[in-house]
Length: 154
Image: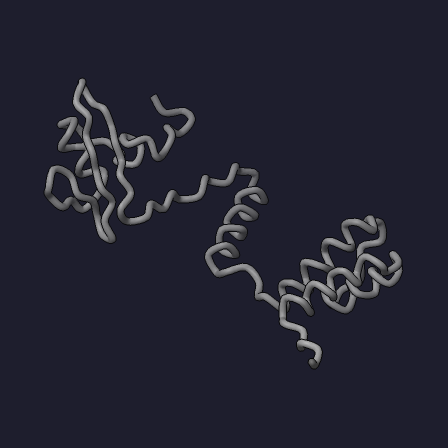
């Protein structure tokens, strides 16, 4: 029987394992090859190993998706401006069931592709349902416990 050709994951695994045997200087050279910039002078061997391994995986498997890159850019911009980054938006999958007890009654909402279902009726948003339940304007995500009150709010 012939030897089985290496699959993509096997080849990647072998590349990553081979990095562990390289000297610090060889890892510095790999850094320069992969990042196309000189290696920082005081970086530890362990961090070099992780950074080069990450870059190899990124090239083989693909990098971060657009949404993740955009989120990281937002966080970086906020930190650079001296602000705390806002928490990521909560994305609720269709079919999710939300429960809220209000004045002794338990209210159930089912998340749809667009909007929500409450008491066998489709609603455009959680906020519309929260207003129906309470009679007052509420943030729907906050009313159903998906979002905390911002600091400084009463």
